[in-house]
Image (cartoon, rainbow, N blue to C red; front, side, top):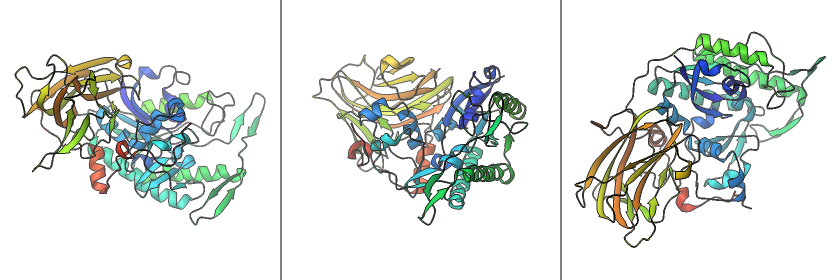
Length: 466
C-alpha cells in the first residue's frame, strides 16, 4: 500500500516526488501536503493575518502569492492534522540559508529570495528585521531549536502515529562538468550581525558556514530529538544542467535515486485513527473576519447579548444582489469524508429552494469561484425550519481534492445568522459533537496574542502598488 507523505523542505526533498528525478515515486507514496522553502521558525510562529481583498498589479501577477498567504497563515499545521500523513519529510535548507523576517516578537516569515517582496501590502505590519543564520548563527540556532522542538512535540501530541524523517542534506561545493570537476563559486555577501554591525562574508567562507549551520541542525534533530534520517551513499556533485539551475542542493541524478531508496527502506506506514480535532479556523468568529475571504459588506459579526458567543449575520433585506456569500480560507484535505457542523437562525429568507451553505473543492490553492471548483455541495434550510431560533445542521461530503472551502450563503434578500461552524474528518453526521477551537486558534490563545483584523483596517505602508 502507498504511504501518505507530507513534505516541509527544499528542492532535494520535494524533487524526490518529481518524475523528472524519480520516475516511479508514485508506486510508493502519495503526497498529501507540502510546503517549500519554509523556515520552522516561521511554521511554529503566530499566524500573520492577510487581507486577500487587496488587489494590485504586483499581487495579481505574482505566482507566489498563494504560497505567501500559506506562509503567513501557518496553514500547514491544520493541514497536517487534516491529511494525517504516515511520514513527514523535512529538511533545514531554508533555515540554514534563507533565515526569517521578524514581523513581531511572536510572528516570523521565511526570508524568501525575492519571490514575495511585493506582497507585504497584504498584511498589517511590515518586517522589522532580518535574522539570517549566516550572520547571526548562535542567535538563529536558539530560535530554530526552540521552534523545531515545538514542532516535534505538536506532531507527537496530535499525530502520534506519524513518522518525522529528516533529509540529512550535505551541501555541495563542486560542480561536475563534462571533462572536469571544478569548485562552485560563491560571491561575497554583506549583512548585519546580532550586535547590529555590518559584516562581510567572503565567498570562500560562505559554504563552510552553511555546512556548519545545517550540520548543527541535523545533529539536533537526529541525535538530540531521536528522529530518523535519510541520506545518500556519498558526497554528490552539483549538476550544471539541473532543471532548476546549478546550486548547493541541485545534485547529480544519482543523489535522488540513492536517497529515495533510503526513504523507502526507513519509512513506515502508520495506523492513524480519526481524531476529533476541529479543522476549521474562526468558525466561532472570535477573530472577527480573519481567516475568511472575499468579505461581503452585507455580512457582519455581532455578539450575542448575555452570552460569550459571536454570530455571523447576513442582513440583506434591502439587498438586490443574487449571490451573497463569504468564503473560508482553503482547508487542505485528502480523499475522504469530512463532516461540517453549524448552527443557524432564520429570521427571513426569500427562497427555501436555494442553499444556505455551500462547499466547493479544488485541486489548486487560491481559488474559490464556481468555474474553478471540481465539486460543489449545497446545504438547504430544513424542510420545517423554525423562525428566530438556532437549529443544528450536520452535513457529510466526500472530498476528492487537495483543498476545499465553505461559505455561508443567501440568495437575494434575507436575514440569517450562523454560529459555531466546525469541520472534522470522517463521516460523523449522525452523532457529531462540538470539538472546540482549531489547532491554530489554540496557538493564538496559548500565546495570548490578538491579531489585527486586516480585512477591516486595510493594508500597511509597505504596499507596493502599481
